[in-house]
Length: 416
Image (cartoon, rainbow, N blue to C red; front, side, top):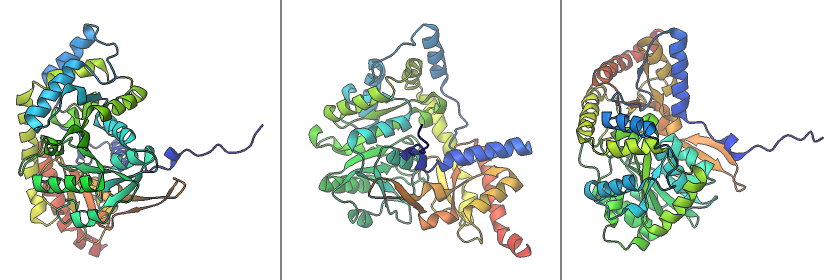
């Protein structure tokens, strides 16, 4: 009988998601203290799914629409989404290039697998959603961080110096999680042109497409309308979680640049999920008609965002968010670190924030593919992510309390 230890899988060395870690930590704090925190640590909206989606889900279950669909999803939903992509996003596409996913996160993982091989490089923004990093590492990719400017937009000059012969994917996220940055058409055009010059595929994560408060959302795939499909390079990921408040439904969709890459993506879907849950797809189809709810959801988040003015007046925002659900709180002028500040404001004011360290990780990948030391963007130590998708009154109150707490921090530390 062997006494050798079992080999350690690559997944065991992956960094856990800081978002989930903070979420669990705050849950434990609430159980321990018996207090309820203002949850500015996680992007859970206060608005519910549209009533039509709830009813469609229940009706599908009652009527027995609970069997498999094809891996690519229900044809009626794909056709409706293709029409939405043409009308709202200015894409040149059809239902044969639209694929339903068990949430945008699952679609992102499948996309990475379908576009590149283990050992290839993927370019991620310096501040990124932690799941993007986990997905890249789990699929065997080598993440390379690209710098952002003072408004947290891609630094094009720095990006042009990155990438090598194994670079395959440029990941773009606008509106951005966690920074709230929105990329304008000119910047997106320059990113696309650089990707064309370097022969990179582009994954465009547009989960927050309906939450742009300054300017307008430009879908990267719309820049390829006049490009022959075989030369296109943008695969786009969309979500029902944000626009429709359907976070727990786990429903998203991917639009591929051409049928050939779609076929490869379909194979990954077949191997990954077989098909997305059928009743949930019915709910998604009904949600697409809920335009009044979408407008209401957008205006609710816009109203909550106004509460961040209290932080901006104290120079506590790295940049005022142009879109999305998140902003970066900048406490680098205070004599503390993000983790200490977050713990203190939670204990004193029951306000939960997420330190930004986990949103800026830079892993080292050794030549054998194993993970080495994990560094972080130097700016992250003085930043926290703040979610403003909750009830506007809650966000306004919490922002005022955080601003006041930060004002007195130096004095408190001096007394101690």
